[in-house]
Length: 146
Image 1 (tube, rainbow, N blue to C red):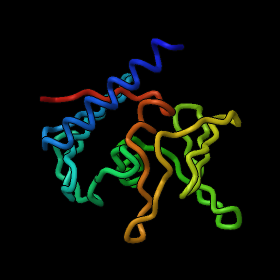
Image 2: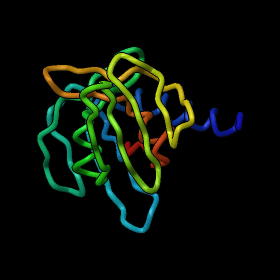
Image 3: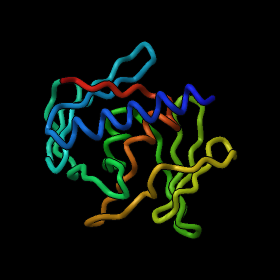
Image 4: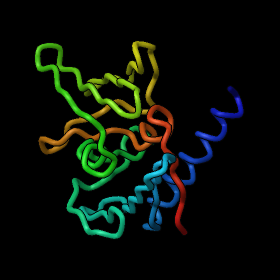
């Protein structure tokens, strides 16, 4: 468990450093279907499997890189539902159900509580989530493409 946390910390630190220096970042799905997403901080453009895609600009907040939730749904096929009564976002991916809400670091993965590195935020009407949601909660790989 300690080794896993250390690995996540190292990946997060490398990603943050890469984004701050405008190097590309590659997030790859670990299943048979590989998805590559390259993005840069403060740039409203990403490449998904080599195709340009307009996105809300990734940025740093709470010492964490924030990415648009829409990138997860469009690039990785993450299922999305919104419970307006409880203001909860529900994501489904590879048999996992992830519930989170803007302004709270508390999330639930298959009903088990998890603390995110940063709370999701709403910016210009778009929900932004911590990049570490990909690695820590969804089990995707994030690799620095220097």
